[in-house]
Length: 294
Image (cartoon, rainbow, N blue to C red; front, side):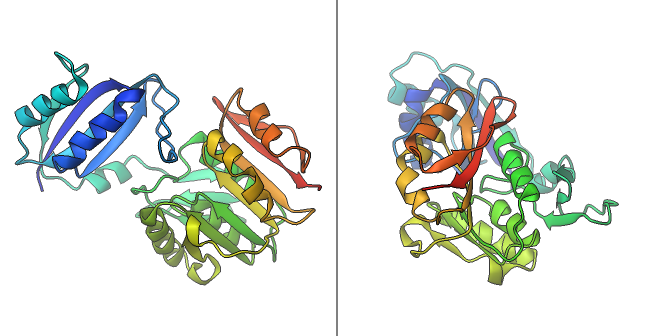
């Protein structure tokens, strides 16, 4: 159906007030984007993006009153005008298909590929293909942090091993691990929508039985042979002990969602329990990997 799209630019500290107004007036979706074009990666409760200024884009029903929305935002922010304000109607189009027309198969490491619906690429004989479309949950391989994790998985000896994907998003990492030979990979997230997306994507790739999913608060106890966590550095630090508890000595782990310059704080949070390898980098992002040694 036809939609109304609005945009504005706010300080990161104003996001809570903006979110409240947009939600109360019936926003169908909200997207946050930093001035450098990077997207928000599932912040924890009360955690703000790392950027100073944020572009907010929201979609509403075409019947939404743009003037009322503008006035409510002004009132909530206590401002005389809105920076970057824009409101425009969007015609009735298949927006997901429009986006998919620009989403191409992507390769990671030596074998791994992510292939969207409708694509029939000629892949190398040894290719391992995951079928995945962009969706509401984060993680389709297009962001540097996801790419780093996928490349790490592609280089690991996963055959017959059990893993945990902590902060699963779309489930792409858990699905990739199983497709690359892992016996099982538990997908954990604090967002019910992400859990739902993971289940659907795992079923689509024929690995639903090997990719159990759960909310973080419901995660069963027990250890795995490897763990991958693609979440923000502050969350990694806060969860360090919990993540370590999932790995025995000799277990492998990969941590991403870490900006350049934050890696030392994350490593310190894990104390001497991990023998770290050289960090891997893509753009401004870092992946830390290593082996639990204590």
